[in-house]
Amino acid sequence: AQSVTQLGSHVSVSEGALVLLRCNYSSSVPPYLFWYVQYPNQGLQLLLKYTSAATLVKGINGFEAEFKKSETSFHLTKPSAHMSDAAEYFCAVSVPGSSYKLIFGSGTRLLVRP
Amino acid sequence: NAGVTQTPKFRVLKTGQSMTLLCAQDMNHEYMYWYRQDPGMGLRLIHYSVGEGTTAKGEVPDGYNVSRLKKQNFLLGLESAAPSQTSVYFCASSSSGGYGYTFGSGTRLTVV
Image 1 (cartoon, each protein chain N blue to C red):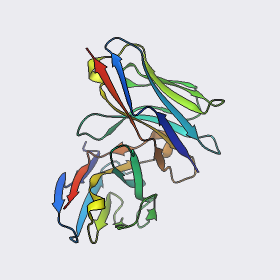
Image 2: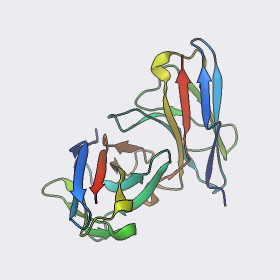
Image 3: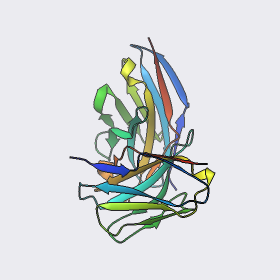
């Protein structure tokens, strides 16, 4: 069975600092991996996705993530945090052939300090 | 270009009451999903559908039923609401897993 672990339910950074949100996955077959962002009282918006092409994936709003098979990780980074990045971020895994069900991590809330 | 539309956006139910949440998508997507979101638990899959007329159980199906009579609509029913079903419910659709999901804006349900 697939699973996702997000390390740190809350991450706090200063504006302009590096953002690093951690995600580790478990899957018996090569997965698809996703990062979603949720702003308060809104639905989820796709930030980026890995689907077995390039291991370094660039997404919207300056975010990127690197798929590392040896570490079973898909950490999300952004070089310089902006106040507007404050939100909750979810990592998710999907396995081809599983009806494309997305399995979500428990989420990480990013706080950006002025 | 509506995407995925959920109705209602908010609802308060009394224990034992029933209700139906409606999800409609206009993207001709085959796959549709219902999730519930609870603090600290991420999103958990309730039921899903891989096409018109099909439904299947997800991770937390108990207390819920679904129907997909038309490709564009996916209904989630609560026959006898319980306080444990207080949550935010999200519907999503997908054409294939590689493209990810399109989510609705959610339904906030409170059962008192």
